[in-house]
Length: 180
Image 1 (spheres, rainbow, N blue to C red):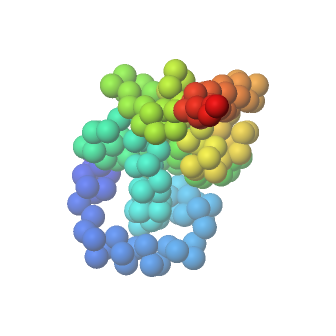
Image 2 (tube, rainbow, N blue to C red; image 1 turned 120 degrees about the vertical axis):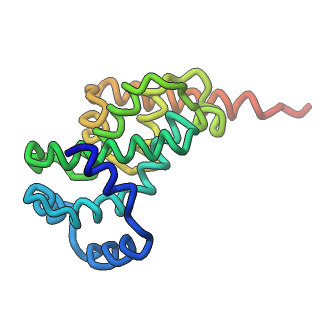
C-alpha cells in the first residue's frame, strides 16, 4: 500500500494538481483530514499540494539534496495516509504533518545542513535548536505546537529560543566594529 501511495504522489501531473488545488482552496485542513480518514485520495493530494512548498522550506534545514527532500515528503504523506485514522484533531493538521516530517528528518541520519545557522549567524546551535527557530519564525507554529512537533517540553523549546537569540545577538554584535 505504501508503495502504491508513493508512486501516486510522484505521478501527479501539473494539470491534475492545479485542478485539485483549485477545488481544495476553500476546504480546511480538518475537512481534508476527515476525507483522508475515509480513504479519499483527492483529499490526500490536496494536503500534499497545500504543504509541499512549506515542507521543502522546512526540510532544507536538514539536507540540501532535492531528491532526498522529495522522498521525505512522499514518505510523510505515505504516513499521513497510513496513520490518518490515528489523528484525533487534538492539534492542527499542519502541526501533525510537520511532526511527521521532523521525525523523519531527524531519524534519516544523513548529513545535516545548517543553512539557517550560516545565513543568520546562528553557528554553534544544534539541528534541533535550528529546527525550533524555523518552526517558530518561518512556519509560525506556537511554542506548544513546536513542543508537540519536536517532542520537547516548553522549557526546552524556550531554551532553544534563548540560545538562538543569544547566538544571533553575538553574531550581530561581533560584526559591528566600534569607531574611534
